[in-house]
Image 1 (cartoon, rainbow, N blue to C red):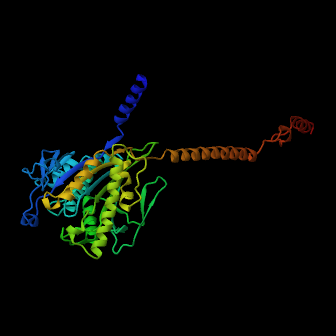
Image 2 (image 1 turned 45 degrees about the vertical axis):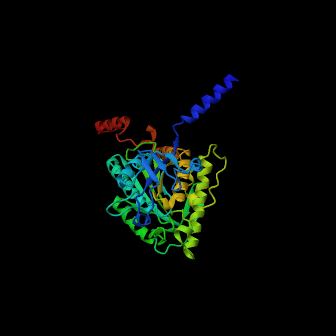
Image 3 (image 1 turned 135 degrees about the horizontal axis):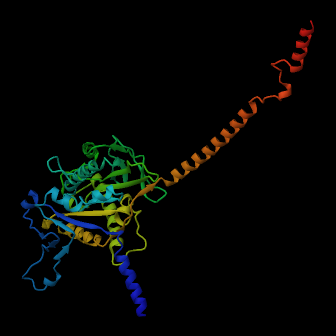
Length: 431
Protein backbone atom coordinates (compact mmCIF):
# COMPACT_ATOMS: atom_id res chain seq x y z
CA UNK A 1 0.00 0.00 0.00
CA UNK A 2 2.68 2.62 0.80
CA UNK A 3 4.36 1.88 -2.54
CA UNK A 4 1.07 2.39 -4.40
CA UNK A 5 0.55 5.71 -2.65
CA UNK A 6 4.06 6.83 -3.56
CA UNK A 7 3.46 5.85 -7.19
CA UNK A 8 0.19 7.78 -7.31
CA UNK A 9 1.80 10.81 -5.68
CA UNK A 10 4.75 10.66 -8.11
CA UNK A 11 2.30 10.43 -11.03
CA UNK A 12 0.35 13.45 -9.75
CA UNK A 13 3.54 15.46 -9.27
CA UNK A 14 4.71 14.56 -12.77
CA UNK A 15 1.36 15.59 -14.21
CA UNK A 16 1.36 18.84 -12.23
CA UNK A 17 4.83 19.71 -13.53
CA UNK A 18 4.01 18.96 -17.15
CA UNK A 19 5.52 21.92 -19.07
CA UNK A 20 2.89 21.54 -21.79
CA UNK A 21 0.06 22.42 -19.38
CA UNK A 22 -0.86 26.11 -19.09
CA UNK A 23 -3.16 27.75 -16.59
CA UNK A 24 -5.75 30.13 -17.97
CA UNK A 25 -4.77 33.67 -16.96
CA UNK A 26 -7.60 35.71 -15.44
CA UNK A 27 -7.48 39.47 -15.00
CA UNK A 28 -10.19 41.82 -13.73
CA UNK A 29 -10.65 45.44 -14.74
CA UNK A 30 -12.83 47.82 -12.76
CA UNK A 31 -14.10 50.82 -14.71
CA UNK A 32 -14.70 54.25 -13.15
CA UNK A 33 -18.14 55.33 -11.98
CA UNK A 34 -20.19 56.92 -14.77
CA UNK A 35 -21.95 60.26 -14.48
CA UNK A 36 -25.34 58.53 -14.35
CA UNK A 37 -24.19 56.29 -11.53
CA UNK A 38 -22.85 59.27 -9.60
CA UNK A 39 -26.14 61.10 -10.16
CA UNK A 40 -28.05 58.11 -8.78
CA UNK A 41 -26.03 58.25 -5.55
CA UNK A 42 -24.53 54.83 -6.22
CA UNK A 43 -21.86 53.70 -3.82
CA UNK A 44 -18.59 52.04 -4.81
CA UNK A 45 -18.66 48.37 -3.87
CA UNK A 46 -15.62 47.04 -5.79
CA UNK A 47 -12.35 47.96 -4.15
CA UNK A 48 -8.93 47.11 -5.59
CA UNK A 49 -6.47 45.98 -2.94
CA UNK A 50 -3.05 45.78 -4.57
CA UNK A 51 -2.25 44.20 -7.92
CA UNK A 52 -3.99 40.87 -7.35
CA UNK A 53 -6.76 41.37 -4.81
CA UNK A 54 -10.30 42.71 -5.15
CA UNK A 55 -12.92 43.05 -2.42
CA UNK A 56 -16.63 43.16 -3.26
CA UNK A 57 -18.75 44.84 -0.59
CA UNK A 58 -22.38 44.01 0.07
CA UNK A 59 -24.45 47.16 -0.53
CA UNK A 60 -27.17 45.87 1.80
CA UNK A 61 -24.81 45.12 4.68
CA UNK A 62 -25.63 46.91 7.91
CA UNK A 63 -23.02 46.91 10.66
CA UNK A 64 -25.69 47.52 13.29
CA UNK A 65 -27.80 44.54 12.24
CA UNK A 66 -26.42 41.75 14.40
CA UNK A 67 -28.80 39.08 13.04
CA UNK A 68 -27.72 39.58 9.40
CA UNK A 69 -24.04 40.12 10.06
CA UNK A 70 -23.14 36.51 9.20
CA UNK A 71 -25.26 36.63 6.03
CA UNK A 72 -23.25 39.36 4.35
CA UNK A 73 -22.30 38.70 0.73
CA UNK A 74 -19.01 40.54 1.04
CA UNK A 75 -16.26 38.53 -0.58
CA UNK A 76 -12.62 38.89 -1.53
CA UNK A 77 -11.08 37.52 -4.74
CA UNK A 78 -7.54 36.87 -5.87
CA UNK A 79 -6.64 36.96 -9.59
CA UNK A 80 -3.51 37.08 -11.72
CA UNK A 81 -4.01 40.82 -12.28
CA UNK A 82 -6.50 43.39 -11.00
CA UNK A 83 -6.76 46.83 -12.64
CA UNK A 84 -8.43 49.76 -10.96
CA UNK A 85 -10.15 52.73 -12.60
CA UNK A 86 -6.82 54.54 -13.00
CA UNK A 87 -5.19 51.76 -15.05
CA UNK A 88 -4.30 52.72 -18.62
CA UNK A 89 -4.71 50.68 -21.78
CA UNK A 90 -0.95 50.20 -21.94
CA UNK A 91 -0.94 48.80 -18.38
CA UNK A 92 -3.56 46.21 -19.30
CA UNK A 93 -1.69 45.22 -22.47
CA UNK A 94 1.71 44.92 -20.78
CA UNK A 95 0.33 42.62 -18.08
CA UNK A 96 -2.04 40.42 -20.08
CA UNK A 97 -1.17 40.26 -23.77
CA UNK A 98 2.42 41.26 -24.51
CA UNK A 99 3.83 37.87 -23.52
CA UNK A 100 1.53 36.11 -26.01
CA UNK A 101 3.32 37.58 -29.05
CA UNK A 102 6.49 35.50 -28.71
CA UNK A 103 4.39 32.37 -28.34
CA UNK A 104 2.41 33.07 -31.51
CA UNK A 105 5.65 33.62 -33.45
CA UNK A 106 6.93 30.33 -32.06
CA UNK A 107 3.96 28.38 -33.44
CA UNK A 108 1.54 28.42 -30.48
CA UNK A 109 -2.09 29.54 -30.36
CA UNK A 110 -3.22 32.39 -28.13
CA UNK A 111 -6.58 33.92 -27.21
CA UNK A 112 -7.62 37.07 -25.39
CA UNK A 113 -11.30 37.61 -24.68
CA UNK A 114 -13.21 40.18 -22.67
CA UNK A 115 -16.02 38.96 -20.42
CA UNK A 116 -18.56 40.80 -18.32
CA UNK A 117 -21.96 42.50 -18.22
CA UNK A 118 -23.07 45.15 -20.69
CA UNK A 119 -21.67 48.61 -20.06
CA UNK A 120 -18.63 47.32 -18.14
CA UNK A 121 -16.06 48.54 -20.69
CA UNK A 122 -15.20 45.41 -22.72
CA UNK A 123 -15.16 47.10 -26.14
CA UNK A 124 -13.10 49.97 -24.78
CA UNK A 125 -10.49 47.52 -23.47
CA UNK A 126 -10.35 45.43 -26.64
CA UNK A 127 -10.78 48.06 -29.39
CA UNK A 128 -10.29 51.39 -27.62
CA UNK A 129 -10.23 54.75 -29.37
CA UNK A 130 -7.81 56.63 -31.63
CA UNK A 131 -6.18 58.34 -28.65
CA UNK A 132 -6.36 55.25 -26.40
CA UNK A 133 -5.96 52.14 -28.57
CA UNK A 134 -7.12 48.88 -27.07
CA UNK A 135 -5.55 45.47 -26.55
CA UNK A 136 -6.28 44.38 -30.13
CA UNK A 137 -4.40 47.29 -31.63
CA UNK A 138 -1.49 47.21 -29.19
CA UNK A 139 -1.01 43.45 -29.55
CA UNK A 140 -0.91 43.61 -33.35
CA UNK A 141 1.54 46.53 -33.27
CA UNK A 142 3.81 44.50 -31.01
CA UNK A 143 3.43 41.47 -33.28
CA UNK A 144 4.61 43.34 -36.38
CA UNK A 145 7.38 45.05 -34.43
CA UNK A 146 8.84 41.71 -33.35
CA UNK A 147 8.37 40.27 -36.85
CA UNK A 148 10.33 43.18 -38.34
CA UNK A 149 13.38 42.20 -36.31
CA UNK A 150 13.21 38.59 -37.52
CA UNK A 151 12.56 39.09 -41.24
CA UNK A 152 16.24 38.73 -42.11
CA UNK A 153 16.19 35.04 -41.12
CA UNK A 154 12.49 34.17 -41.38
CA UNK A 155 9.83 34.51 -44.05
CA UNK A 156 6.35 35.46 -42.72
CA UNK A 157 2.87 35.19 -44.17
CA UNK A 158 0.14 36.92 -42.14
CA UNK A 159 -3.61 36.67 -42.78
CA UNK A 160 -6.67 37.81 -40.82
CA UNK A 161 -10.42 37.27 -40.59
CA UNK A 162 -12.99 39.29 -38.64
CA UNK A 163 -16.44 37.88 -37.91
CA UNK A 164 -19.36 38.54 -35.59
CA UNK A 165 -21.90 36.23 -33.96
CA UNK A 166 -25.27 37.96 -34.05
CA UNK A 167 -28.39 36.06 -32.92
CA UNK A 168 -26.48 32.78 -33.28
CA UNK A 169 -25.57 33.49 -36.91
CA UNK A 170 -22.08 34.19 -38.27
CA UNK A 171 -21.38 37.26 -40.39
CA UNK A 172 -18.22 38.51 -42.07
CA UNK A 173 -17.35 42.02 -40.88
CA UNK A 174 -14.91 42.50 -43.77
CA UNK A 175 -17.67 42.09 -46.39
CA UNK A 176 -20.47 44.55 -47.07
CA UNK A 177 -23.91 42.96 -46.50
CA UNK A 178 -22.36 39.61 -45.61
CA UNK A 179 -24.46 36.48 -45.96
CA UNK A 180 -24.76 34.01 -43.09
CA UNK A 181 -21.72 31.76 -42.79
CA UNK A 182 -21.54 28.09 -41.80
CA UNK A 183 -19.45 26.80 -38.91
CA UNK A 184 -17.96 23.36 -39.52
CA UNK A 185 -15.04 21.22 -38.40
CA UNK A 186 -11.98 20.03 -40.29
CA UNK A 187 -10.37 16.59 -40.18
CA UNK A 188 -8.70 17.49 -36.86
CA UNK A 189 -12.01 18.61 -35.26
CA UNK A 190 -10.95 22.25 -35.32
CA UNK A 191 -13.71 24.81 -35.98
CA UNK A 192 -13.68 26.31 -39.48
CA UNK A 193 -15.87 29.16 -40.76
CA UNK A 194 -16.78 28.38 -44.37
CA UNK A 195 -16.82 31.23 -46.86
CA UNK A 196 -15.11 33.80 -44.64
CA UNK A 197 -12.94 36.38 -46.40
CA UNK A 198 -9.21 35.99 -45.69
CA UNK A 199 -7.14 39.18 -45.98
CA UNK A 200 -3.35 39.13 -46.45
CA UNK A 201 -1.77 41.84 -44.32
CA UNK A 202 1.76 43.22 -44.38
CA UNK A 203 1.80 46.01 -41.78
CA UNK A 204 0.04 46.93 -38.57
CA UNK A 205 -1.64 49.80 -40.40
CA UNK A 206 -3.36 47.28 -42.68
CA UNK A 207 -4.89 45.58 -39.65
CA UNK A 208 -6.02 48.88 -38.14
CA UNK A 209 -7.76 49.83 -41.37
CA UNK A 210 -9.55 46.47 -41.51
CA UNK A 211 -10.59 46.73 -37.87
CA UNK A 212 -12.08 50.19 -38.35
CA UNK A 213 -13.88 49.03 -41.45
CA UNK A 214 -15.24 45.97 -39.67
CA UNK A 215 -16.35 47.83 -36.55
CA UNK A 216 -18.53 50.14 -38.65
CA UNK A 217 -20.49 47.04 -39.77
CA UNK A 218 -20.80 45.56 -36.30
CA UNK A 219 -24.27 45.58 -34.76
CA UNK A 220 -24.57 48.18 -32.00
CA UNK A 221 -27.69 49.67 -30.45
CA UNK A 222 -28.53 51.91 -27.51
CA UNK A 223 -30.01 50.42 -24.34
CA UNK A 224 -30.82 51.82 -20.93
CA UNK A 225 -27.58 50.30 -19.58
CA UNK A 226 -25.26 51.44 -22.39
CA UNK A 227 -25.69 54.03 -25.14
CA UNK A 228 -23.43 52.05 -27.53
CA UNK A 229 -24.15 48.48 -26.51
CA UNK A 230 -22.57 45.76 -28.67
CA UNK A 231 -25.30 43.36 -29.77
CA UNK A 232 -22.91 40.73 -31.14
CA UNK A 233 -19.69 38.90 -30.31
CA UNK A 234 -16.73 39.95 -32.48
CA UNK A 235 -13.86 37.52 -33.12
CA UNK A 236 -10.62 38.61 -34.81
CA UNK A 237 -8.30 35.82 -35.97
CA UNK A 238 -4.73 36.55 -37.08
CA UNK A 239 -2.79 33.63 -38.58
CA UNK A 240 1.01 33.84 -38.76
CA UNK A 241 2.81 31.31 -40.97
CA UNK A 242 6.60 31.34 -40.95
CA UNK A 243 9.42 29.45 -42.63
CA UNK A 244 13.18 29.77 -42.41
CA UNK A 245 14.98 31.51 -45.26
CA UNK A 246 17.92 29.09 -44.91
CA UNK A 247 17.76 26.22 -47.44
CA UNK A 248 17.73 22.81 -45.83
CA UNK A 249 16.57 19.31 -46.62
CA UNK A 250 14.08 19.61 -43.75
CA UNK A 251 11.64 22.50 -44.18
CA UNK A 252 9.51 23.28 -41.12
CA UNK A 253 6.48 25.56 -41.25
CA UNK A 254 5.28 27.07 -37.97
CA UNK A 255 1.69 28.30 -37.79
CA UNK A 256 0.55 30.47 -34.87
CA UNK A 257 -2.99 31.73 -34.42
CA UNK A 258 -4.05 34.76 -32.39
CA UNK A 259 -7.72 35.14 -31.44
CA UNK A 260 -9.03 38.43 -30.03
CA UNK A 261 -12.65 38.28 -28.86
CA UNK A 262 -14.87 41.17 -27.82
CA UNK A 263 -17.92 39.49 -26.32
CA UNK A 264 -21.32 41.10 -25.99
CA UNK A 265 -22.32 41.73 -22.39
CA UNK A 266 -24.77 39.71 -20.40
CA UNK A 267 -27.81 41.76 -19.49
CA UNK A 268 -31.00 41.70 -17.49
CA UNK A 269 -34.19 43.06 -19.01
CA UNK A 270 -34.86 44.95 -15.79
CA UNK A 271 -31.62 46.89 -16.26
CA UNK A 272 -31.62 47.39 -20.03
CA UNK A 273 -35.45 47.85 -20.30
CA UNK A 274 -35.36 46.18 -23.71
CA UNK A 275 -38.44 45.26 -25.71
CA UNK A 276 -39.08 43.78 -29.15
CA UNK A 277 -35.96 43.12 -31.23
CA UNK A 278 -33.62 44.27 -28.46
CA UNK A 279 -35.21 41.68 -26.17
CA UNK A 280 -34.61 38.93 -28.76
CA UNK A 281 -30.98 40.04 -29.13
CA UNK A 282 -30.53 39.98 -25.37
CA UNK A 283 -31.92 36.45 -25.13
CA UNK A 284 -29.47 35.18 -27.76
CA UNK A 285 -26.58 36.98 -26.04
CA UNK A 286 -27.49 35.47 -22.67
CA UNK A 287 -27.90 32.04 -24.25
CA UNK A 288 -24.40 32.02 -25.68
CA UNK A 289 -22.88 33.45 -22.49
CA UNK A 290 -24.77 30.86 -20.45
CA UNK A 291 -23.24 28.13 -22.62
CA UNK A 292 -19.83 29.75 -22.05
CA UNK A 293 -20.46 29.82 -18.31
CA UNK A 294 -21.45 26.14 -18.33
CA UNK A 295 -18.22 25.26 -20.12
CA UNK A 296 -16.25 27.25 -17.55
CA UNK A 297 -18.04 25.41 -14.75
CA UNK A 298 -17.29 22.02 -16.33
CA UNK A 299 -13.64 22.80 -17.04
CA UNK A 300 -12.87 24.68 -13.84
CA UNK A 301 -14.73 22.55 -11.30
CA UNK A 302 -13.02 20.56 -8.53
CA UNK A 303 -13.10 17.56 -10.86
CA UNK A 304 -12.90 18.30 -14.54
CA UNK A 305 -15.86 16.82 -16.39
CA UNK A 306 -15.14 13.97 -18.78
CA UNK A 307 -17.45 15.58 -21.34
CA UNK A 308 -17.80 19.32 -21.94
CA UNK A 309 -20.70 20.41 -24.13
CA UNK A 310 -19.32 23.01 -26.53
CA UNK A 311 -22.15 22.61 -29.04
CA UNK A 312 -24.81 24.57 -27.16
CA UNK A 313 -23.65 27.78 -28.84
CA UNK A 314 -21.55 28.83 -31.81
CA UNK A 315 -19.53 31.02 -29.47
CA UNK A 316 -18.37 28.03 -27.39
CA UNK A 317 -17.69 26.03 -30.55
CA UNK A 318 -15.38 28.79 -31.79
CA UNK A 319 -13.67 29.07 -28.39
CA UNK A 320 -13.31 25.31 -27.93
CA UNK A 321 -9.51 25.33 -28.19
CA UNK A 322 -9.28 28.59 -26.26
CA UNK A 323 -11.05 27.13 -23.24
CA UNK A 324 -9.69 23.62 -22.98
CA UNK A 325 -7.50 22.84 -25.96
CA UNK A 326 -4.21 23.84 -27.54
CA UNK A 327 -4.05 27.52 -26.62
CA UNK A 328 -2.66 30.09 -24.21
CA UNK A 329 -5.73 31.95 -23.04
CA UNK A 330 -6.24 35.23 -21.21
CA UNK A 331 -9.63 36.22 -19.83
CA UNK A 332 -10.17 39.87 -18.92
CA UNK A 333 -13.29 40.18 -16.77
CA UNK A 334 -14.92 43.61 -16.58
CA UNK A 335 -17.07 44.83 -13.72
CA UNK A 336 -18.76 48.02 -12.63
CA UNK A 337 -17.94 49.39 -9.17
CA UNK A 338 -21.46 50.79 -8.70
CA UNK A 339 -23.83 49.31 -6.14
CA UNK A 340 -26.60 49.42 -8.78
CA UNK A 341 -24.92 46.50 -10.59
CA UNK A 342 -24.03 44.34 -7.61
CA UNK A 343 -25.65 41.17 -8.98
CA UNK A 344 -23.89 41.47 -12.36
CA UNK A 345 -20.54 42.15 -10.69
CA UNK A 346 -21.02 39.30 -8.23
CA UNK A 347 -21.80 36.76 -10.96
CA UNK A 348 -18.96 37.94 -13.20
CA UNK A 349 -16.39 37.64 -10.41
CA UNK A 350 -17.62 34.16 -9.51
CA UNK A 351 -17.25 32.98 -13.12
CA UNK A 352 -13.81 34.56 -13.35
CA UNK A 353 -12.80 32.90 -10.10
CA UNK A 354 -13.90 29.53 -11.45
CA UNK A 355 -12.04 30.08 -14.73
CA UNK A 356 -8.73 30.29 -12.84
CA UNK A 357 -8.77 26.51 -12.48
CA UNK A 358 -8.98 25.81 -16.23
CA UNK A 359 -5.89 24.22 -17.75
CA UNK A 360 -5.00 23.95 -21.41
CA UNK A 361 -2.55 21.60 -23.09
CA UNK A 362 -0.07 23.29 -25.40
CA UNK A 363 1.83 22.00 -28.40
CA UNK A 364 3.58 23.81 -31.22
CA UNK A 365 1.84 23.87 -34.61
CA UNK A 366 4.50 22.61 -37.02
CA UNK A 367 4.03 21.28 -40.51
CA UNK A 368 7.02 19.34 -41.82
CA UNK A 369 7.63 18.85 -45.54
CA UNK A 370 9.95 15.85 -45.13
CA UNK A 371 7.52 13.57 -46.98
CA UNK A 372 7.61 15.80 -50.05
CA UNK A 373 11.40 15.92 -50.06
CA UNK A 374 11.52 12.10 -49.88
CA UNK A 375 9.25 11.86 -52.89
CA UNK A 376 11.40 14.29 -54.87
CA UNK A 377 14.55 12.35 -53.97
CA UNK A 378 12.99 9.12 -55.22
CA UNK A 379 11.94 10.79 -58.48
CA UNK A 380 15.46 12.15 -59.03
CA UNK A 381 16.93 8.69 -58.38
CA UNK A 382 14.64 7.10 -60.98
CA UNK A 383 15.46 9.80 -63.52
CA UNK A 384 19.18 9.26 -63.02
CA UNK A 385 18.71 5.52 -63.67
CA UNK A 386 16.84 6.24 -66.89
CA UNK A 387 19.61 8.59 -68.02
CA UNK A 388 22.24 5.89 -67.40
CA UNK A 389 20.28 3.34 -69.48
CA UNK A 390 19.88 5.80 -72.35
CA UNK A 391 23.60 6.58 -72.34
CA UNK A 392 24.48 2.85 -72.55
CA UNK A 393 22.04 2.34 -75.40
CA UNK A 394 23.46 5.32 -77.30
CA UNK A 395 27.07 4.12 -76.92
CA UNK A 396 26.13 0.65 -78.26
CA UNK A 397 24.40 2.22 -81.27
CA UNK A 398 27.43 4.36 -82.02
CA UNK A 399 29.74 1.32 -81.81
CA UNK A 400 27.54 -0.63 -84.25
CA UNK A 401 27.74 2.08 -86.92
CA UNK A 402 31.61 2.46 -86.91
CA UNK A 403 33.19 0.86 -90.13
CA UNK A 404 35.42 -2.22 -89.57
CA UNK A 405 38.78 -2.27 -91.56
CA UNK A 406 38.87 -5.19 -94.17
CA UNK A 407 41.59 -7.96 -94.10
CA UNK A 408 45.02 -7.20 -95.54
CA UNK A 409 44.62 -9.70 -98.51
CA UNK A 410 41.65 -7.85 -99.85
CA UNK A 411 43.31 -4.49 -99.83
CA UNK A 412 44.37 -3.23 -103.28
CA UNK A 413 48.14 -3.14 -103.83
CA UNK A 414 49.56 0.35 -104.13
CA UNK A 415 53.06 -0.83 -105.22
CA UNK A 416 53.94 -3.20 -108.19
CA UNK A 417 54.79 -6.75 -107.36
CA UNK A 418 58.56 -7.46 -107.00
CA UNK A 419 58.47 -10.38 -109.48
CA UNK A 420 56.78 -8.29 -112.14
CA UNK A 421 59.39 -5.60 -111.65
CA UNK A 422 62.27 -8.07 -112.12
CA UNK A 423 60.73 -9.55 -115.31
CA UNK A 424 60.30 -6.12 -116.82
CA UNK A 425 63.97 -5.32 -116.12
CA UNK A 426 65.15 -8.55 -117.86
CA UNK A 427 63.10 -7.88 -120.99
CA UNK A 428 64.59 -4.40 -121.25
CA UNK A 429 68.18 -5.79 -121.00
CA UNK A 430 67.62 -8.41 -123.81
CA UNK A 431 66.37 -5.73 -126.19
